[in-house]
Amino acid sequence: MSEISKLRPVDAIRLALEEEKKAYQFYTAVAETAEYASTREMFLFLAEQELKHQRRLEEELSKDFYSEM
Image 1 (cartoon, helix red, strand yellow):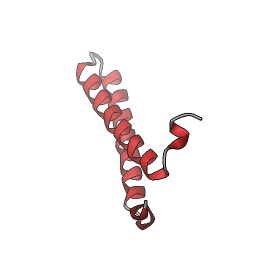
Image 2 (cartoon, one colour):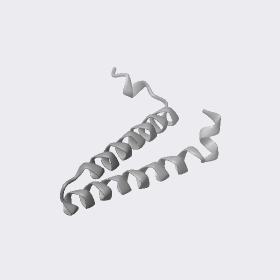
Image 3 (tube, rainbow, N blue to C red):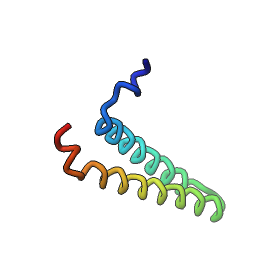
Image 4 (cartoon, rainbow, N blue to C red):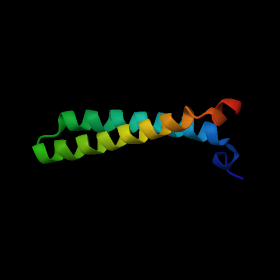
């Protein structure tokens, strides 16, 4: 059994949230170094997607039933 399969849902959400934050930082950093505007725009788009994922995961964590876990 893998370590991931042993995670409680709330812990999996927290882990995913941290990964989304790292991905956002990565994409924004790479966007700053992009030579071409189209490349920069692509990385900024990807960074925005990570922010959406973060917000969704944060919404899940704010649900009452996770406070019991």
